[in-house]
Amino acid sequence: MPKPPRPTRKLSTFFLFPFTFFLTLLLSLPWVNAKEAPKPKPQPWQIDGIVAALDDGHDGVKGYAFGKLAEYKWQDLKPVLWS
Image 1: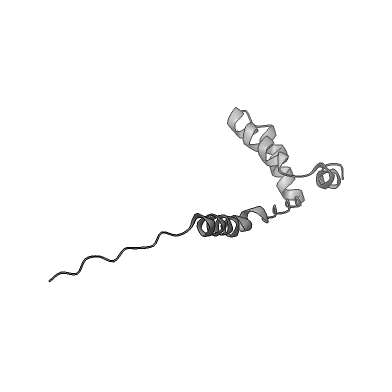
Image 2 (image 1 turned 180 degrees about the vertical axis):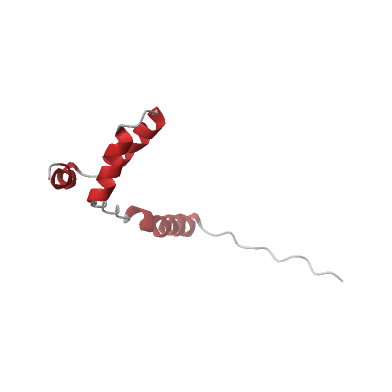
Protein backbone atom coordinates (compact mmCIF):
# COMPACT_ATOMS: atom_id res chain seq x y z
CA MET A 1 0.00 0.00 0.00
CA PRO A 2 1.54 3.38 -1.03
CA LYS A 3 2.08 5.93 1.68
CA PRO A 4 0.52 9.36 1.24
CA PRO A 5 3.03 12.22 0.97
CA ARG A 6 3.75 14.05 4.17
CA PRO A 7 2.62 17.66 4.36
CA THR A 8 5.56 20.05 4.03
CA ARG A 9 5.90 23.16 6.11
CA LYS A 10 6.32 26.47 4.34
CA LEU A 11 9.10 28.76 5.45
CA SER A 12 7.93 31.80 7.29
CA THR A 13 8.24 35.13 5.47
CA PHE A 14 9.81 36.48 8.65
CA PHE A 15 12.69 34.07 8.06
CA LEU A 16 12.79 34.29 4.27
CA PHE A 17 13.04 38.09 3.99
CA PRO A 18 16.06 38.58 6.33
CA PHE A 19 17.79 35.57 4.81
CA THR A 20 17.37 36.97 1.28
CA PHE A 21 18.50 40.43 2.40
CA PHE A 22 21.58 39.02 4.12
CA LEU A 23 22.48 36.90 1.08
CA THR A 24 22.11 39.88 -1.28
CA LEU A 25 24.26 42.04 0.98
CA LEU A 26 26.90 39.35 1.30
CA LEU A 27 27.17 38.86 -2.46
CA SER A 28 27.26 42.57 -3.30
CA LEU A 29 29.99 43.62 -0.84
CA PRO A 30 32.99 42.69 -3.04
CA TRP A 31 31.78 45.08 -5.76
CA VAL A 32 31.09 47.91 -3.35
CA ASN A 33 34.55 47.80 -1.80
CA ALA A 34 36.45 47.64 -5.09
CA LYS A 35 39.14 50.29 -5.58
CA GLU A 36 40.17 51.83 -8.86
CA ALA A 37 43.65 50.91 -10.01
CA PRO A 38 46.11 53.83 -9.99
CA LYS A 39 46.89 55.38 -13.37
CA PRO A 40 50.34 54.51 -14.72
CA LYS A 41 53.10 57.10 -14.83
CA PRO A 42 54.28 57.72 -18.39
CA GLN A 43 57.78 56.97 -19.56
CA PRO A 44 59.46 59.42 -21.96
CA TRP A 45 59.50 56.88 -24.81
CA GLN A 46 55.75 56.34 -24.43
CA ILE A 47 55.00 60.05 -24.66
CA ASP A 48 57.31 60.40 -27.69
CA GLY A 49 55.36 57.65 -29.44
CA ILE A 50 52.02 59.27 -28.62
CA VAL A 51 53.20 62.68 -29.85
CA ALA A 52 54.46 61.06 -33.07
CA ALA A 53 51.06 59.39 -33.54
CA LEU A 54 49.35 62.79 -33.17
CA ASP A 55 51.21 63.94 -36.31
CA ASP A 56 49.88 60.98 -38.31
CA GLY A 57 47.61 61.60 -41.31
CA HIS A 58 44.95 59.06 -40.34
CA ASP A 59 42.14 60.23 -38.07
CA GLY A 60 41.80 56.84 -36.39
CA VAL A 61 45.44 56.91 -35.27
CA LYS A 62 45.04 60.45 -33.93
CA GLY A 63 41.93 59.47 -32.00
CA TYR A 64 43.68 56.47 -30.47
CA ALA A 65 46.67 58.66 -29.52
CA PHE A 66 44.40 61.24 -27.85
CA GLY A 67 42.71 58.41 -25.95
CA LYS A 68 46.04 57.10 -24.68
CA LEU A 69 47.16 60.62 -23.77
CA ALA A 70 43.97 61.12 -21.74
CA GLU A 71 44.83 58.09 -19.56
CA TYR A 72 47.65 60.01 -17.90
CA LYS A 73 47.36 62.78 -15.32
CA TRP A 74 48.57 66.19 -16.48
CA GLN A 75 50.85 66.46 -13.46
CA ASP A 76 52.68 63.33 -14.65
CA LEU A 77 53.03 64.69 -18.19
CA LYS A 78 54.62 68.04 -17.29
CA PRO A 79 58.14 66.73 -16.49
CA VAL A 80 58.16 64.54 -19.58
CA LEU A 81 56.81 67.03 -22.14
CA TRP A 82 58.64 70.14 -20.98
CA SER A 83 62.05 68.68 -20.23
